[in-house]
Image (cartoon, rainbow, N blue to C red; front, top):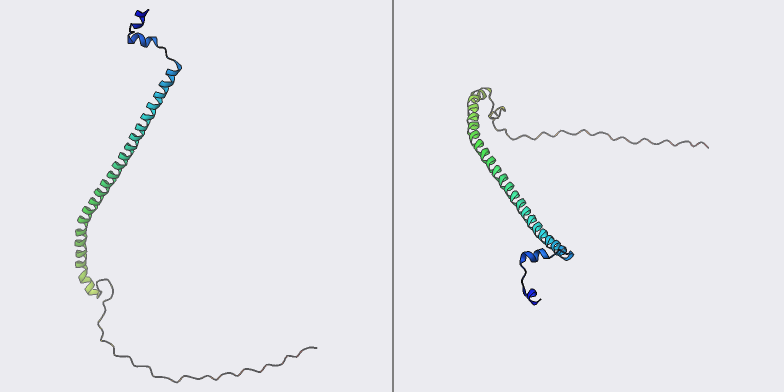
Length: 147
């Protein structure tokens, strides 16, 4: 018998010889819970990082769109402003002779004629004011009391 106890059993035979017990199931379920918890935290961190990255990309895209729009407006303004100035000067040049003939100033109002400065105004002569006679109050008649 001593010879049997010293003999080593191979791993394959030893694994086949062990039957799962309730304790083994309990320990395996605890290990699975720990692994699931660890992975769920990692997934939550990955999702949060993905949301932050998406928000950063959206902000950057909005900034780029705004910069492009401002650049386009500046280009249009640079093209339109000289043309408007030229149009305005052409209209003024064509209207100048008509305005002069009508005697109007630049803003379409009658041109002010230059008058000689007026001399100081003389004070009006004082006229005597009419005095009205004041009325005297009428005497009140005594009421007859019926007794």
